[in-house]
Structures are given as C-alpha cells and as structure tokens.
Length: 217
Image 1 (spheres, one colour):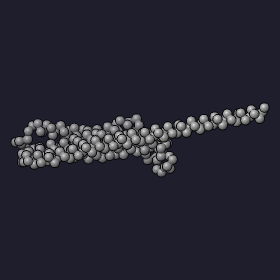
Image 2 (tube, rainbow, N blue to C red):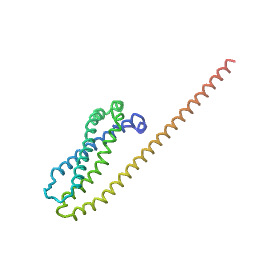
Image 3 (cartoon, helix red, strand yellow):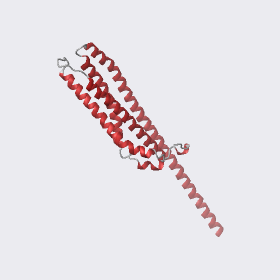
Image 4 (cartoon, one colour):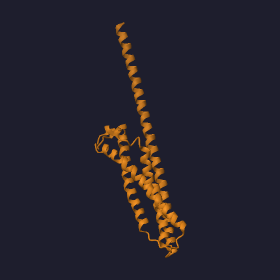
C-alpha cells in the first residue's frame, strides 16, 4: 500500500503498520513452532535405547521433561498463531486502512507477544537444551567424550544466542522509545502551531471589531 510522505505519521497509518507487524510475528511463530516441535517429536521417537543402557535415569527424565516442554511450548505458540492469524489476514487482504479497527490484534496484543516469545526465545532455548541432552542419551554408552564435546560446542552457541537476544530486545526497546519521543515532540509542535494560529485568529478578529466600531463612530 502506497502512502505519501505526509501520511506516514497519521494514526491510521501507524495502526496499519502495527497490524502488519502482528501479522508477521504470528506467521514467523507458526512456522518456527511447527518446524521445531516436529524435530523434537522425531528425536524422541527415533532415539534407540537398549534395556541394558548405562544412561543415568536422571538424564532420561531430563530428556523426557525437556522434550515434553519443548513440544508443549511450541504447540501453545502454534495454537495462538493459528487462531488469531486468519482474523488478521482477513483484514490485511482488504488493503484498507479504514478497516484496521476490525482486526483483533489490539485486544489480543498480549497473546501475540506470548506466542512470539514462546516460539523464538523460550522455544529456541529449550531446543538447544534438547540437543545437549540428546547427545548424552545417544552417545553415553559409546563415548562420553563425544557427549562432552557436543556440550562444549553448545556452550558458546548458547552464550552468543543469549547475548544476541538481550542486545536485540534492548535495541528494540530503545527504538520504540525514540519513536515514541519523536511522536510526542511532533504532537507538541502541532499543539503549539494550533495555539499560535488560534491566538493570531483571535487578534485578527479583535482588530476587525475595533475597525468596525471606528467606522461606525
């Protein structure tokens, strides 16, 4: 949808941008959740455990709990995305800014944010933990060095992942703050312009009245 430069900061266009952002978040959440939950289910089904395995029972319990949490978190995110996304898509496909208020993205804002957080942050952390536990369960009977090697490789990846997540969310919050401050300044300037124009109009009306009275006298 094309907009002129003057209309980029109107309330209607800003609401349309927020609608598109909610739509993109739900699409990304649904795709990521479906993919990672499928991988987790395949990993749990395909893992081969012998009756005489040396894997500690605590490790098996951790694997079962982590897999269950991973699938449950992604299924919750997928359910939220599947329920809300069609209603947003129906409004977006009309390509009309005047119909933005008919979309439920404002009322269901927190559900959209929960789906986004579960799918990207919590879900990916659980997936990395799942890989580490799966390496122990798979390689414990054959080579503990291989299991330790997998954990050593995953530790810096996890650190980089957390550092990027923190930096990304801090940058996003800073950007939203700057945009909000800029919008408030624009509103203050607009208010000052309106007040100055009203004051000037009042002075002009007063001068006209005085001139009229002078002519009458």
